[in-house]
Image 1 (cartoon, rainbow, N blue to C red):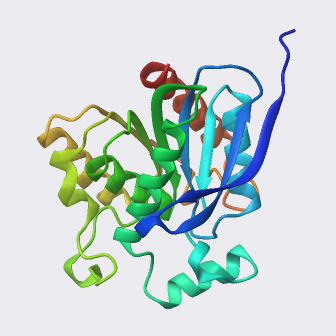
Image 2 (cartoon, helix red, strand yellow; image 1 turned 120 degrees about the vertical axis):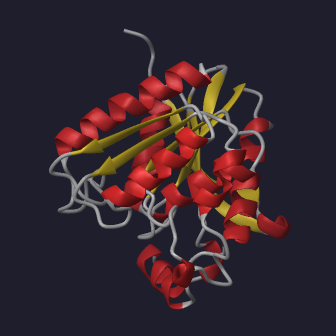
Length: 247
């Protein structure tokens, strides 16, 4: 049996406008080199479930970093931070992209990185993955897990989110994997089809999979929305995608 060990800890990274924010780093204990993955948490926040996902990537031989995109709210729990964000009208896209840019930069300066960085996000994090993959440099592969709000109607646009991520599709610069539930309402099957049509229009490298009997958050082991068959198959597809493009 090979030796197995990992390190998981809170670190500080420089995010949007050089703000110092918290992030959760998990990595194998070994010289590497290892591919990196930026993990974007869902709207319930920078919580235990997301940190468990981050450790799972480390167990599979990745350096995983999950920035706390709600850090500036300053509340005592992830749920309170999320409620504060919702009350203010959602996450500002410019701030989110600044924090993600900082997470990519942090991974890229680690001596045990193999020079490849992927990104994955769930729920609101899936939307941020799509936007980041289209607008930020340094991403080698992306995974959008049921990101709601990639497709946005004109009345849904706000000062914090002034443009729909789908409108940046022509600039997508890396392969994109999308995992969705057919019973989801945000994104709906129609939203997924619209996004896929746009990816085809611009001749992008992508793969979409939509699961029967699964809705939003089917990866969430701590929620009643969890669907193990869909989630297990989804994890297989995620690791296959990253093995292809990050190793």
